[in-house]
Length: 257
Ligand SMILES: [Zn+2]
Image (cartoon, rainbow, N blue to C red; front, side, top):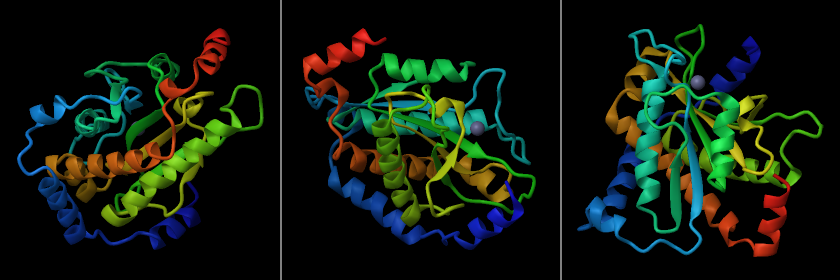
């Protein structure tokens, strides 16, 4: 990244509103005062749950970025992904699909295939950022920067990706440090799905010692998962799940595979 872009992004960093974050998680508890996780699990699922493919970045031989204190990106992003999976599982209107189950290596193309095969309505890839300057910090949300061509996502998929990414960035704005205030675009291979709206979330800079510590802590992982979940839920309310589309439309999709 160019140095002046970093400076522009740094200028945009918000201070962590810790009090607000605690108030929200407390409200959440109040909302379900007596329910344990098992009680919520037994809730009847909606006939057409909104399917979220959660892609924990890296895995297996690919450890991802490594923090100054030796924290592996693959481990923290998997922990955040599992927490997000739990939140989505407790939501009667949504269904989680973990793309990477455990510490396994999965190729980038295979990841979006798994999401498509699961008829995912949204693909969320979870990562931690890295930079040579240990002072750089904050979360970012990316969608695909795609060249005009035949293999990229359809216009409606791209629009949906940007809508969903904006919802999550909106949650981060009030709960997390932001590296950049806008949804960013990059040519990430994992975001090239034609028909599954996709985004990549950089949860923080693992190369920043302070953020490395936070990324490895259960409470911060929980906060990140909550912000991502709230953003997904806000987006899901505006989008009808694939499984709810008319059969005729589904048939057309299946025939084109
Ligand atoms: Zn990564």
